[in-house]
Length: 269
Image (cartoon, rainbow, N blue to C red):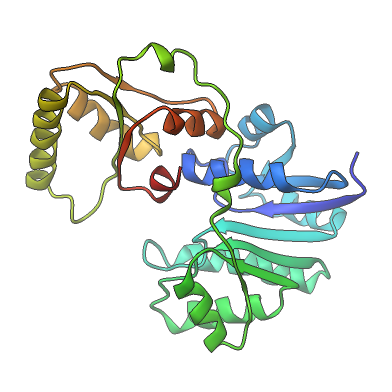
């Protein structure tokens, strides 16, 4: 058992490999005396994968119970405080951070990407919660500059996924080389026409280079359909890979010569 309990709050247990890689990195970095409690969208899966205490991120009762048992509230990593995809995201994360501060927990914002914040309310909430933090770290210069404008001095550090230890992915070495990773996601700018052009480009690339294409749906509920659509048209060796854990993802990227990506951690890894 750890001497100190810390709540870990992020987009965990929601099926996104990038956020799971952040969680795995954080758990790897925590001092031995810290016992984490992870707020998760799938507590059983989080427990099975990492062997740590986990509670439902949507259960107000369980969150309050966890706060009553903890000394620290650790927020991150990732771009939690942004309202580009939804105004609800900063209200959720900012609300939890504010609640933790009101209840006397020491709060830390870790490996954050701040923004975009289009609304006055979400900008105010973000600044207020960060001002109450014992420590703040960000992973990009734009976030650091924004916080400095708010009279907050953050630590600017690399994305922590760089430090994640790899775990071998079974059978990767048996796939014909050279190998290229392809990480796509839905996006308003990726129209049907552009998607078709991209697919044809991958077909031509594979024919010209005799590469094996490894399609990696980082967020399967969003990305798998695109991977399937491309795979059906590829003429050469290809695989859709869905690793069991983020450490295996690191191993896959160690074993490719090129990555074509639309998701941040697909490029970082």
